[in-house]
Length: 402
Image 1 (cartoon, rainbow, N blue to C red):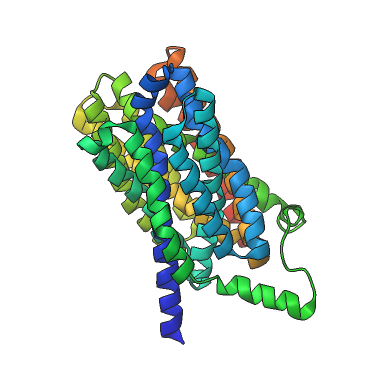
Image 2 (cartoon, rainbow, N blue to C red):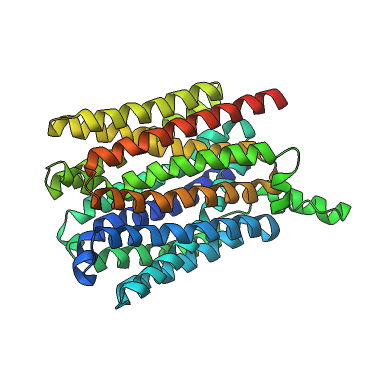
């Protein structure tokens, strides 16, 4: 029985890891293809910020719908449909011929990816014992920076010189993964158990949005959602604008891409380590470590004066910014019970996506207004402080109610 459980866990986390790799490819795709898209469509910095935000905006309704239906019809079904939608509209990106149609297909691709994320988190967390959920989500979500690092490397080759190739790759890979998901991905046993309980007792165990705001979950939902909002705002500023910020500071495009590669490679390690610490340490210590690390990285980016210092600062920011996002997803799976877990994670993710959408747009406006890279980095610091405070309050409330 234990061997069967281990096999179930390994297969689930491995397939979810593959989907997270594809998410990383897509997140990085916008930044890498930005120069080619700017030239092809004649965009300025402000319009480029809107382009970055279009896909992120799609993540918002996607996360809400994906999480909600996951608690109704199953994690596996919703994940398969989500990946299929994402693949279709990512391929459509290369065939559009106007700025508005470009924004539309990026929005719809983002919706597919947004619907996938609550299911990835929920499947990974429910595939293991409760005491191992942080590790499982960390191992799954480290696929995101791995995918982004892979695309950063590909972009340095001749293949990456044409922006359309980036989206061909991003659309075809999920199509290849779909049959693997259909054949090998197991449904969550916790979901099946909850569903069987529903059928046996004729009670409604499937959660709804209103359950997130009952007396037990209201403060949890508010606290984790605000933290998601400000953390993802900073995450997506870094993901979308880091190479451009390097160029604003006087470095070359190639050096900016190299910084992004260091950012993503360290993010892979940070996501795994912080996920493991979430299971082993007191939660408050993990919160203090990861937000303290982000602040240290942002200060180092502002203060660095040489290329080596910039690379080190990028690695420091990457380890904690992306690792922090993985920990927040793990917290979402810990905060909510099975019957509303995907709905709760979807809600928090959707609120976070509002921050993620606003972040690159605000950064673009700051750059267009002449504040420069230092102004963008400084604007991110208060967001991190607010996120840390709200997460510490949430941890304290969880401990009190335990």
